[in-house]
Length: 275
Ligand SMILES: [Zn+2]
Image 1 (cartoon, rainbow, N blue to C red):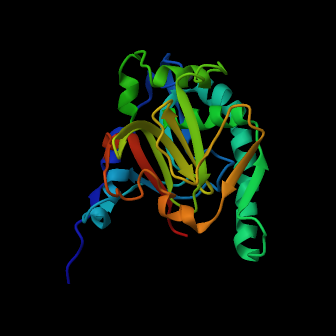
Image 2: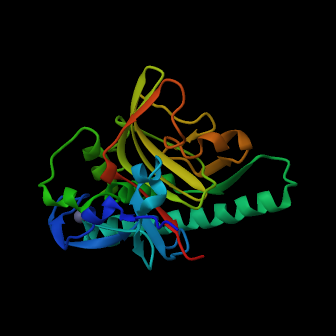
């Protein structure tokens, strides 16, 4: 009989803090817990968190995730950003995810739909504001120890979450597609190389939507993805099986001339346990 020698996820070194710089507004002060995925958009259950890089390779089964009894959480933003800037838009995310979840389930249970897509009304600006806010929050608390600096990638995203509707119009594009899995994926930033093109990517994926932000002009995205414009009034998910192979993009398993560079602590997976 052999016993697996379990090792705790490195995520443990990135969760303990009480005060620091808010990763959205940059103010120093007491930090609050942000649920990612947000409360209301999913059922809050017991979960484990670990770095996505710990899901890869032969040692993946030997790593124990960090447990939480009430959802995947990140203590990296201030109360004002959490409750007001993101909080005011979270209802839009909750409504869209709940309606689309039940439409997707009905689609696969009935299997009689003449179309291979489902759709739902959306206020795209509110939806994107909350989703980007959660992407900025879902990372290591160690980022909160350093005074904020302007960067061409993150500063427009922060301004957008803080209420500037035009902050990302020249800097970022948003894509989304059907995500059929129970695992929740987040990546604050990573670089993805695909056949000679380098893209900088941020991602938040949980059933039934993968939501990805990319630098404008360097877009790499799955073929069945759609672009989200901030004045869109509807979301469409293509449910055809041709998309499944790339649903976990960019964590779908690299193919051909593809490479990825990321910091372990900035890409996190959480998944329900004990169900
Ligand atoms: Zn803040």
